[in-house]
Image (cartoon, rainbow over all chains, first blue to last red; front, side, top):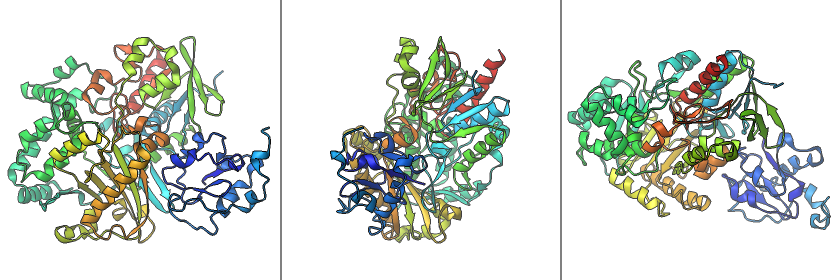
Length: 110
Length: 519
């Protein structure tokens, strides 16, 4: 079980969570941030600091964001486990689910 | 109608102690835990798949026999390692090896630091007995003492003087008296100085540091208990209490962070969680620090202005950085330290600077400077307890002191400090960088976000003389300034009987609740 970043982060990437993470396991893709599923130590520090409440404990992921658990895994298919996001920097890629989304900043807030 | 008789906020060792007692006494008890596991800062946590770590507490210090017996905490499997810890010097001094067997220990000390050091240690332990009574280190169900009551604990003038040292003196006033030789006693002096500052924001030459020394050296007079390592790590104690609580019909909800303790007409009605839901109960016991519980969660509008003042400015500047390592093998020590390659020696290693250097490190950390050569402990519990790591691998943890906790720059400076710590280990064991699979560094800030330890303060009020005795509350607040809200109790490490993994604050809170229920 791990924490998962979901749709509200797409095209926003506030990065407050990156500063909070004690193990530097939140990686930056082109359009979204991703939590490394095995590097995460489940401390929960990131969840309350997210200004758009995009971060959920995997078990609590709402149904409309169900695909994001897999997205946070598949993002690392090629990256593997680099052992720290700082040394990797921005990765010019996204999980397929995110690549297929329209620009989120064009979508008016509900 | 409330769903529960009592709600306990936090499932650390104290919360679980209270929970086990209340549920056992027939009260329907709910424990609310913000994390995904029980145990808080006394948990053994699988931070990395297959690797288990003790995150804050790692040894069971002596506890009152009454609590150990009643809760079955004295029945858990312990690790009877022949060597409890090894302390290394920096300049080729003979190491101090703490053998479990007292005869072997005396022989070792006699052969290295000399018989006068053995005598000095015995006198130092004797010195701590008066202060242990004054601080109420092993008191159960007794209120904290005023300073007058502390002095009144003395059986004779020597104990009275020791109590005076403990409240107003420096650790080095005491250490210099019994172990004066800066060369011959160097390793012992460094170790004792560190023991005196590790739960403080003080140097060993700063007045008030003798309090922590006395607290740490104290042993109860009714047992011969000493520091013990547990099979499965420190979390075994909490797992035992949790299982006992659940078996009695108690309930724990994880990932349930309490935001507010609700108060109406002078009594508590329950709690509100972060998700906005409310749970009602006539009794709420909080294991967060007293100031956080009362000022933030209850709200100062429900407290007297004097109580708010009393709770302000509690010192929480805990200056530790900890690193947890996943290792692909064991460190290989070289040169004078090759004797360490016996895994027996690797369970717990102390590498502490001289008292003078510890003082300097602390003074510099106050100005934002990371110590170049930090005083630190390194533990590799998996050498004695193979279940702590996958086969052939090892889980190690390092704890270093004098981190510039006031800089407000934890995230950047923790990496600087971590590198200094790893450099230091590498000077003794040159392969240490190569055997690392991964390491995780926690700053004080993380202890706050993960365990609600205010500013990282695992003591919930550091072990300073001004935060002991009359300024350390009991279950219903300060003796002369109680919490005047019915149903709210304090049970955490910031209460009398704490800090440390003593179980006393939780035990006291449970029995206060039961006593109040009877009346």
